[in-house]
Image 1 (spheres, rainbow, N blue to C red):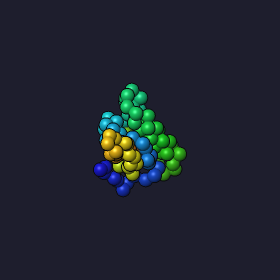
Image 2 (image 1 turned 135 degrees about the vertical axis):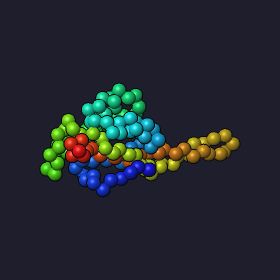
Image 3 (image 1 turned 180 degrees about the horizontal axis):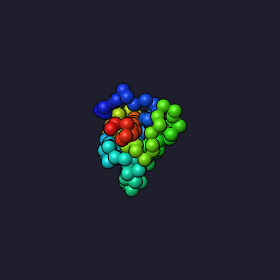
Image 4 (image 1 turned 120 degrees about the vertical axis):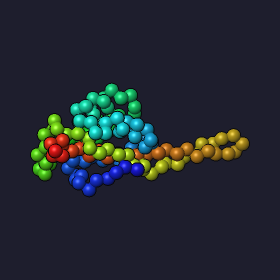
Length: 125
């Protein structure tokens, strides 16, 4: 699925689990902001007409707040960029829909686990 980094501590990362949106649909939104600066990513998400955009936007803001409150990092908020963002598949809720002639069809309601990792451009240089 996604590449996970060992260098990402809980201070520069935010996760949201069990989001009731299919991972394939969330990945469409997440691919738009990978590698972008935080301000640019939030602008892109603000004008993206997908249901996952507000969820991902909130995650980016939560990761920024984690860095601001952390004593481990003295990064400038203006230098932050989205270094990693990935979506893993969560548990699938299985429902059944009645069909003709006594049959039933399975409906899969998929969930996602979304992770956003922020880094500082100056720390990489």
